[in-house]
Length: 427
Image (cartoon, rainbow, N blue to C red):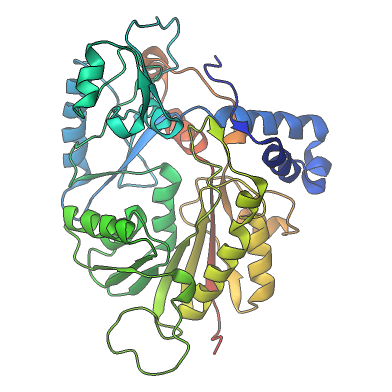
């Protein structure tokens, strides 16, 4: 059932996105009708939440089973004894899956209404409370008094039944989209290594990397906005991780141009200083869900490709020979994903594209001139890959664990991952 219309984009942006999803390679492989159907499915699915809420367990402080039991008890409290399944992902052992039920039908209009902004509305659809900063206006009723005091308000009849994680097991859980959790496993950090997270805020992947290293080694996190850097530090402290050092620094300037010995361990860094680098690049964010409207201009959307290439160039220079570089985005555009891979392989002959483990997403999208083998080495989580489904408690009880995990892997945010190895020095 379509509860919301498809995502609303500026016409110039929608045409740009459509050109990518209906390029010559795709039209040749799928035909015009199927390509158009997939693009319309993409626009529709972007306005709806994914099928599952995913949380990552902080394995540095507790076992997955212990946290799973605590979370199950918490969900029963939230939903008055309604038994929600909490699944451990078989390929991402530190990730738990909680189904999102809905959309609900025949919702009654309430006498008390609160109108919120698009960002707040998207968060509410995934289980968040409403607070003052997200409110645009409200009708005169008892709730407006509560809201003015800064107290959270819940919808009496939510469109989607999704758990709230406000202050729920904050030292044990980190709310994170499934593909974002895949990235750190693909990077495969090892204890004792020196690792750089080049665009790190708010620190979800940074803290995941540190946990996978058993907090042994050094994780350098950079972001050029000071408030975001403070958030990284707060998350590291909350999760009990001591191997993280966060700096307010522009990643495009992180390469030390003179060869004076690096003595203080602060940015900028000497060439070939890191064993592994994660470049979760700034992007147009057009894979985020639910997203009912995007007012960005085409100029804004297209501004990210050159910035990503600057950051990528710095990352290659900072990586040791034999080191691993993982590039990721939370967008669906061809220009910021497969075209960047094609550019990188041509610009840096010493890089080799690698197979990824785990491989939960689909292969890369046609259109950038990459070979079939190269496309298989990429991961694209594509919201156009399947039609949206209505989900209720009954259908969940009847589904197998394998079917639920398959659905979680397929019906998630739009995301892209590429993994490279630096085979020889660039010095």
